[in-house]
Length: 190
Image (cartoon, rainbow, N blue to C red; front, side, top):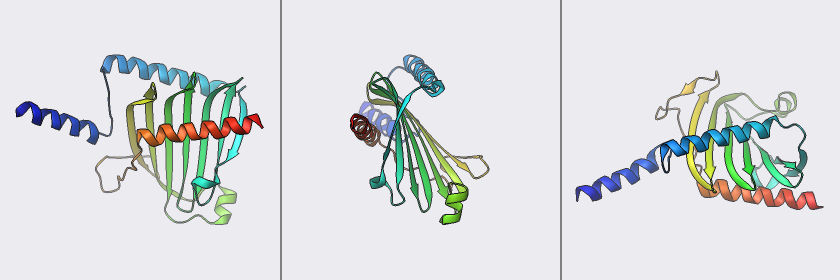
């Protein structure tokens, strides 16, 4: 009975934790360091070919996605979505066609943006920002870190009254990346 309760508690703890770990922590730490290095190399390359698509079907205010290619190898997709009360940027990184990292930044406005603000600044007055870092190995999520920041850039403690994390599932991230890959590659062929 004690083993069963302990097992159920460990399952609950792994699901409730804002940082989800899978597997051996030492080897996972090495994997995450390798992922960070790969992402840094991808970001530093300014010679990639680019393909841009509209993603009007994902947001009321529209959006755009840009795929970055090293010859035929898709390395990164940057997706920007706009809404009346915020904007959302997702960066998907790939290594040999496999999703390795997703960075999501969700900026929430204090009030709806005006047309003038959108033209002048590109966004409305941001009052808080959510950052999510999701690490993958073999299309499996191995670590997720979600943090909220106020408009001054100060970290909002998890569990506080202003901390309201959006649920980002492994399935949504992988399927979203695959959908964007397909759409960008189709546009590239035309």
